[in-house]
Image (cartoon, rainbow, N blue to C red; front, side):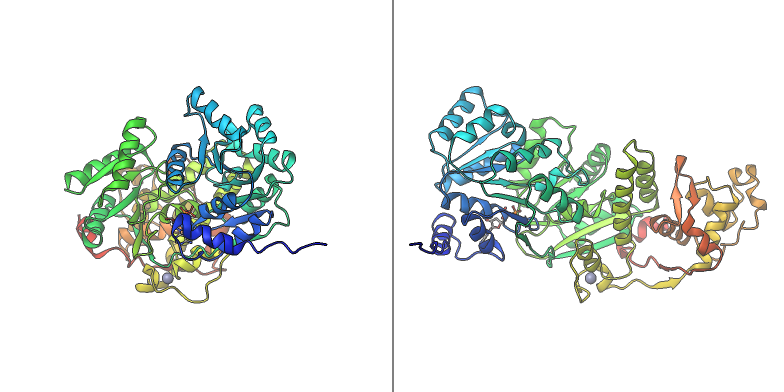
Length: 525
Ligand code: ADP
Ligand code: ZN
């Protein structure tokens, strides 16, 4: 005689209420919990703040044996474990921050079955000693958090994560759940392969964050633009300002403080003490701004971050989505604000071109950058482009991005584009934007004359437009791949430019009308 397995959900709901005080599951949480409690594997793609932790914590409590959580965020394990202990969960962690004595204690608790949840760093898990120990104790499940770290294509690749192949090999009967907020196809395929999750159900939540307003403006005087933005829209709010270099992090923080805005720097070059103090202050104070490199933010769970500002281009759409996703986790209106300009585009393109990475990796990175630049130059709803990149089609423009709120004018700029491209060709495809602009405007600078460029037929053909227009045209041509950035910021025409030069294709470009009104000061300078 067989009996149908009991429905686990009443027990799950009771535990949700008793331990966490929540009345209901959010979205797909219930289905994930059911799958895992029933002993199945799963892949979970959920945006940051979506509620991934519950998806493995609760099943770990409901299943016999310990739930093992693999996480790369050593700095956060203690907090997570402390929080769980306060809820009455028997939780512990194993990582390099523990003393040998503490390590032995945790291992002892594990061996004698006194743990519901064990957080472990991947390099610790992969030690033969840990694996052997795990083979001797009853296990409830394996949860691999931040699972995108397995993928070389991602921005957080961690070689140790590839070692997690041992989980399906050595523990084939223990349920595995992989969780991540990064959803592109290639990353997903890598996760499926390393953790052998082929055929397992995939739980994919919408990546839309409707309360975040997306905005991108032309970079003119970035610090002043930032200050104006903060003063006009987010005075006294908590926010994160991302910069590319440690130096610009420091400078921006100092400058904000000098202007009377409460700000601290955060980057990997600071001492661990300075970093944790910045992090503490950010979490505990109301209106602090952290100026940071991308080193800041992974795992930061502050619900009321009101804005995320980018003073430099992120590396990819994934990076941009994750970084901006730190705004507005409480669901209240928040802003993702970015400024970028020609020099940024030239810089990242050049960095990419000159990197030592294998060709294939470079090609993928270039494609990722292209997607981001297309987003930046967009003349259609930004949210649609962003979600489309993650494979999600949204039928309607969102009404909550700068393009929807203030549609840019798009003009046929084929002629202007031809002028700019031919200035590049005729001067030998090796000069930067400033020099090309001089040629187009007919400025006989010393450099122009010494190169004999004042005799080119293109000299002065663009005098009907101002410098700002040419900068914008050149930026869009680089962003859209008509001009490539080479050594010393030199711009050269690409294959794509040929059809345009021959008049076989046309090109509509946006007029940069989105420059925030407030920054006129810089512009007039
Ligand atoms: P993620 O790991 O996906 O970024 P978390 O697991 O940290 O997200 O959850 C984000 C927030 O949502 C947390 O504050 C958590 O307590 C809350 N949360 C998660 N699930 C629920 C639920 N079912 N009901 C109410 N709040 C929830
Ligand atoms: Zn929109």
